[in-house]
Image 1 (tube, rainbow, N blue to C red):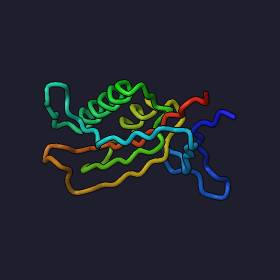
Image 2: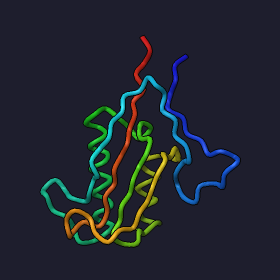
Image 3: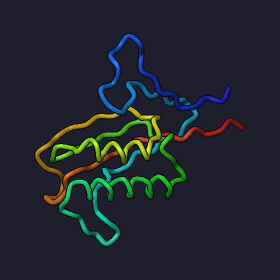
Length: 135
């Protein structure tokens, strides 16, 4: 049997309050990838002061990171998001939904006072798993 990553929201629990899944199961035949937190810096090393511009850059960096390892959004099993400002959910969700296409990973969000550099407003860490096909 070819196992794959599965996601579910148990009926015995409240529905998720956002775009995430309560449980993501990774089969034993998967390779694990853990990323550093991705931030809103562009390819020239510039961090815009606008929160939503940082969000766009962060998602661009996430897509490039996934591509570099031949991963895609279906391989993302867990996301941790840290923000120093209130997230503009209408804007954020458009980027989120474009990446995940309604197949959301497990997720944790925290509002914190500051990140590693004073100009950073958002940081997103990914946990990914790629199923190794049976031979």
